[in-house]
Length: 340
Image (cartoon, rainbow, N blue to C red; front, side, top):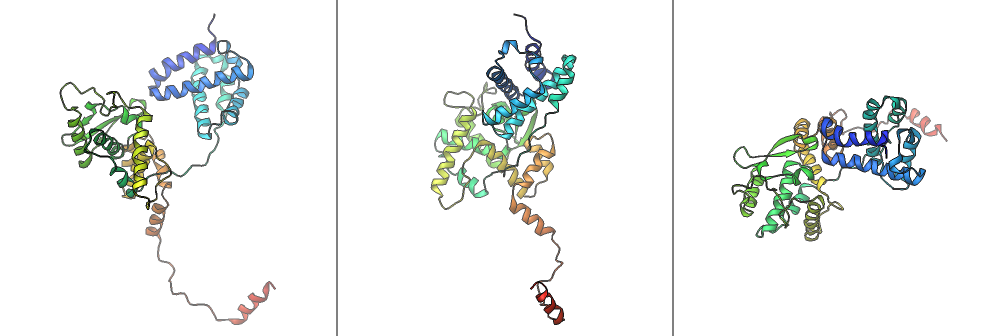
């Protein structure tokens, strides 16, 4: 069977352009792949076009708009997910219009489909008291408890994304002064993050107990499961949820968020740094954001932080001892009678 222009271009886009020229992460490629899996499913269900017969002429701007509506109404995806899917399609058509100039006009129509505006939800994070209670839960007299505390402390101390934590190897940790940990983020971009003394000491204890400081272990996972394999995202989420529920049970008088997820620890680190007065540029570098605009979302997160900033900048223009104006009683009388 002859390969269609759409199939040929999509294959090159996913296997050559994204990893080879854009150098995007494997997770981003999987996300883009999932977009087109849903698109192919949509065309098959709604228009009876089998994936092997899809051509560029089968997919115009009107059908892409209908696909966006289908995602929201039938698949019940959020606006954020809908926009991510559209971003993947936009990226593909920017590539496709240079590979297939004959689709240039329709590509421009598809690229003109706008993203949907959404309300930015409040960034949920742990208070310092929440975090303290959470880190008190693991039993460090056991090997597993020591590992779990090391995971949570490293996640907070470095502000790492969960995948960055999962991908850590023994070689990425330097415990000699200055102690640092090297994270590999999106697009294989690497950054070195300093380790605080308590986290460094905890990591040393954990690595000694797990025999990770022995020769020949440099390529081993820093944190591994019971099968000595790299953790999965659900595995890290399970550990956090386990100790989070323990903390809530042991401290019923304390207000905790409704739930916890690994990325909340990253948010928590950013908020705590802001509360401590750390410059936004340093926070951007620690978190590995490409643009300071991404980091600025944390400025909108904490109302107490806003209130403190406003109070510190508020000049004393009005005295608290304001006498009641009682002069010119005729004018007061006129005002009282004015609207009767």
